[in-house]
Image 1 (cartoon, rainbow, N blue to C red):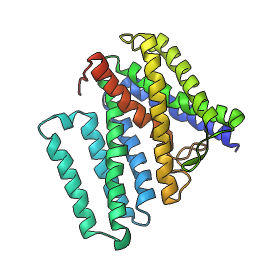
Image 2: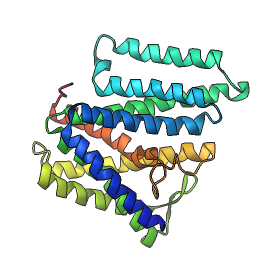
Image 3: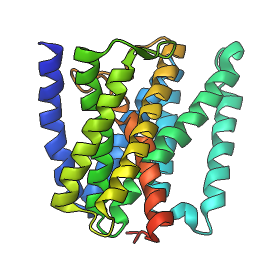
Image 4: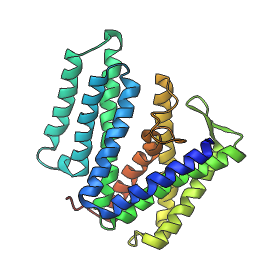
Length: 275
């Protein structure tokens, strides 16, 4: 199948299902996030801990637990410090008694902990947007920024790209693609603001935030590319034909989601209602 056709087809299957569960909310949404956490964390652990399936499964479960703790606001409770330090201690003990090749043990330990906090933690924060006032609208903004940037960057880079953005990390990305991503994200956000909001945020302010959020999301994409190149893989997985792994699709969203969550809390005084 043509890569572009596969890319569009897999998106048309996955996106409506995800949006439906987001609108349902409640445990349907929580289940969606935990499934996404399991897939992305497992992809991460396959990249950084090759050849040790039991360890990858264990670290994935630890990461999913952390995602749930963040998403449901448990880190803000009296147990928050205990959860973080208990998690770090547990992973340290796992590697102490199951170090594998000693020459790479410290590197794999560091990357495993990074994955839990980066992939699991940032996904939990992004999911917390759903529990804000107009939470569905905030998630639409996050998707519009990250996926709009990805779509605009893909087509602008493919047809107009000439100047490399950061060749050492991602040889195919161009400045033209980056600018195209910003433009497409702004168009997407403007359209969804008219349709679903969030209505408490003026459109001009939101579009300015979109420009910054898009740049941050592109940094998230580059950060994952850096990790992939350092461990010698092209895609984080193959769950989505034409897209690679799920982590490849949400790497920008994780950075965008955290930015929007802090923007909503600090810039507009909103607070989540935890389930």
